[in-house]
Image 1 (cartoon, rainbow, N blue to C red):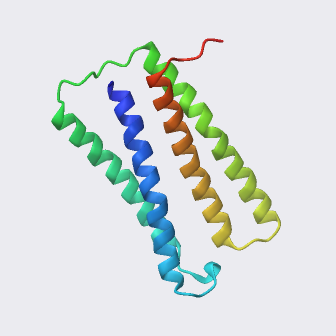
Image 2 (spheres, one colour):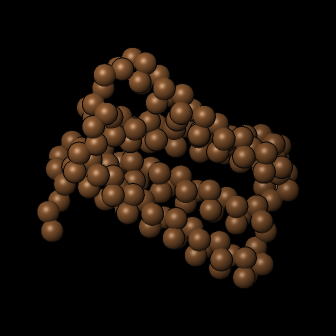
Length: 142
């Protein structure tokens, strides 16, 4: 398993754990009140920051366990990374469009922030899954 494939796994696992943790934190903070009234900003920022720190620590741990791991990034790694990123970025565009439309319609900031965050998570998950599938199979030739 190459270094870049391990990074794809780390990103995927962190995203899959971070979002449910955020949802649970917001639901607990709401405590039966309507969701737009729940204090979500701190949970959102802590979840994003925690995901970043968890990814960094996992990569450091991976480097400690396998110090001579394949650090060379070849053309295949670059192509897989590019293809996975392009696949995931569609959800960033969808989230931006949704947030823009929600803001123009006067929706509450809670829903706008949560749609953007959900689309970031979907981008990470779909991009990570795409990369892992391509590492297990092959890069499509056009």
